[in-house]
Image (tube, rainbow, N blue to C red; front, side, top):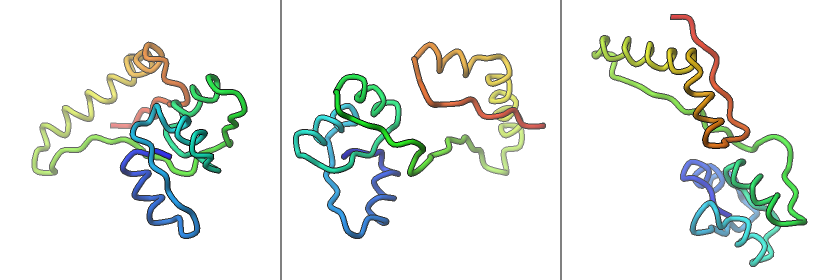
Length: 118
């Protein structure tokens, strides 16, 4: 199976009674899973959903085993940068840019974060 580095770290720490088989890339996870007759594959949900449509007999479990919430940050000492970055992010969400980008790139299963009070 193939995971991002964060998934890999989490699974390496948590799995005590299983062998982790790593695929070279995210798009090859399901192929490696089938070729090596693995019992479970883990990876980015959007890729696994696409694979389930491509390959019969693959079933996705509901929910997720891990969620990586994305963020942006600036040093506290750079208040003007922080104010600008916060306003920029909120405007990108408010204007619909983020939602349109997700739709344009056919990203399924991702949601735009709620607007924050500034």
